[in-house]
Image (cartoon, rainbow over all chains, first blue to last red; front, side, top):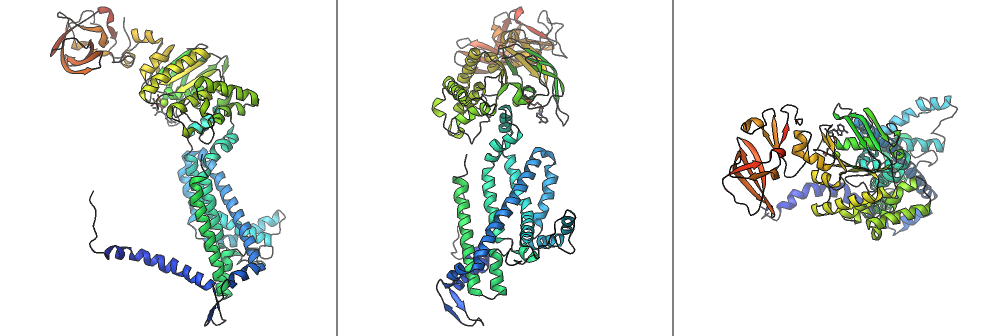
Amino acid sequence: MKRTIFNNQLLPWLLLAPQLAITFIFFLWPAGQAIKQSFLREDAFGINSSFVGLANFRALLDSPEYMNSLQVTAVFAVLVTALSMGLSLLLAVAVDRMIRSTRLYTTLLVWPYAVAPAVAGILWWFIFNPTIGVMPYVLNVIGYDWNHISSKTDAMILVVVASAWKQISYNFLFFVAGLQAVPASLREAAAIDGAGPVRRFFDITFPLLSPTTFFLLVVNIVYAMFDTFGVIDATTEGGPAQATNIMVYKVYFDGFVGQNIGSSAAQSVVLMLLVVTLTVIQFRWVEKKVEY
Amino acid sequence: MASITLNNLGKVYPGGTRAVGDVNIDIADGEFIVLVGPSGCGKSTLLRMVAGLENITDGEVRIGERVVNQVEPADRDIAMVFQNYALYPHMSVRQNLAYGLKNRRTPKAEIDRRVNEAAEILQIGQFLDRKPRALSGGQRQRVAMGRAIVREPAAFLFDEPLSNLDAKLRVAMRLEIKELQKRLRTTSLYVTHDQLEAMTLADRLVVLNGGKVEQIGTPLEVYRRPASAFVAGFIGSPAMNLIDARAVPHLPGTAHAGTIGIRPEDLTVTPDGPILMDVLAVEELGAQRLVHGQTGGEKLTITLPSDSELADTLRLGFDRASLHLFHRETGVRID
Ligand SMILES: Nc1ncnc2c1ncn2[C@@H]1O[C@H](COP(=O)(O)OP(=O)(O)OP(=O)(O)O)[C@@H](O)[C@H]1O
Ligand SMILES: [Mg+2]
């Protein structure tokens, strides 16, 4: 085999430079800044800052608002993940049965994924708008008084539906691929073994789908926790009364609107730790625990 | 246990491919039937129609006295062994064996008894708690067999169950399947494209070609009196020589035939034989040798003892009774 030898020690670094620069400017540097900021307290004019140790983190633990945000995030993430994965699995199973129409159908289902979160948020904001939206009108007809501006539950339902909707097509594609990978002969053998369609699904298909399911579980939790900023911002802005103020939105709100840089930085460090944890779980468990 | 009857069975796939047409077979209770034919001739399709995995376009399938065209696979009282074994990868061997019984609400004690019995018959007792992926190909094959026998079904269906094994294991398992079937006396329908496997296993062979039955008979019947030129060329190894009759016009009694068939072992070297063969290649098999050559532009193969004399040309003779004559267009046997 012929190998390219770089005589010039500088050339490889030059070739790598653009990628390294992007990683540094848009990821490492801000992350470093956030970590630095989380140990500092700035005065009101942003001129002086002093080292305060873990005070910013301690303040978070003592803040009922932050505790509320943790809880809201947990509820939100569980609901978004359950809804988007449940629905997409249902769709994927339906498609897997009539596989010939797959191509057109899957293409259509990618559309929502191509819509940016903020656009999706505004779309749902319109659909559910208490005065001009279609859904409140329909709900009103069946006797439900929809108002996500004043009702905490309605607000949560809105952001969950809007966030889950966008994720369905992504999940769907993975589930279809996963289902296609389950050999037909296994299902046939189970059919001969006396298992009906429902049994076959839960005894054979679903267990064999578990690597896909686990992968999507992590992806969806990460999405719900960190990637739904746009949806929240376009619909409820965290309200009413903090009911939809998830952690990632609170980081933005406290930092940019509230100008509390130290607290905001501490919050983003907590989020960073969560991402790292989830990523580690992802890599460790996908190979080890989800086996058959 | 039950007989299986196929009446005018036919299958057209949704795309329009006719995979099987007009198949009539009566399988007696306890009989071992082998479906054999080249790739794509519709063997699997036929078997899957009997299993209920493929719906039936024409005709009917009877298992016992019952027409089962509309009956679910689970309710046909059959068990199937798949080519890739189709073992449930996330279940232990024991769970694999027990799954069919569990679904049929067999009492726990009865399940245990049958699983242990099957495990003993197939010598897979020490693997019961392993997952399939921790087994060798041969062991998986046994588990697949075990899953069929614990059910004690009316019939076994096999779709090329040995084709994923190496040659030696294939021969050993072939014998085991044969013995097992003799012992259990369960009606069996077995698909293979390997004519040797077919010959050794079958009580009766069904030779398929292009979705149609060419011949049904015991292995010896089919071997001795192939019903068509296709069967003649397919059954037997090395294959029967099939020569265009016009290439050897001097052979007596063959004027009305289109194709003349003669098995390699029926040709002998004799100084005054009517066929002059130019030798092209020789294959040594140890006990005997295959000599390939040609006469009048037609290819010929003969088997000779390994100590026989070789020359560039050989004069060959044969017994008139060992000739097989076939019609030129239809390939059907004439005589
Ligand atoms: N699902 C299907 N849809 C359309 N055509 C099919 C389908 N399955 C099989 N066929 C066609 O039907 C014919 C018979 O196929 P089948 O699988 O029964 O052959 P086979 O004898 O089992 O071959 P092999 O020895 O290669 O397994 C083939 O021409 C094949 O292309
Ligand atoms: Mg086949």
